[in-house]
Length: 172
Picture (cartoon, rainbow, N blue to C red):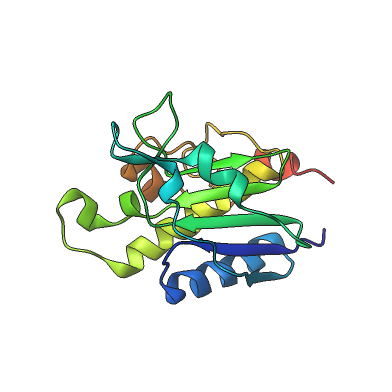
């Protein structure tokens, strides 16, 4: 299945993170992945009461253009109304997804940063959200990339790959 995916920085994102994610997305989806033009910082999505940014408000600002899918990366703490925070969010009908970087860093929790661990987390959550745009749901296999991450520990436990059951569910 040929898949063209574009990565979009929402505000300032380190190029090394984008490059690392681009390579892993291309491998996982077996198609072309490139970094698109960045979009401005999402000041419009800030909720002063929560001191967070609304993922649902940011998502519509991501456009696939000629690509099959778009994945935005934002260096802001995201939420949806029903949860305290989200690592990411996907919009299946619009073929777009978003990943928040702050809570994937050790420093968010007052610990020393670990760049390799941070990048692996970004890859896992990026792949997870992109697979949602292909219709895959959360998986009960804790090592499957589609396992739900309610905490950073959940992200660290899961792998980058789909389990056998989820692979069989990939749309043809």
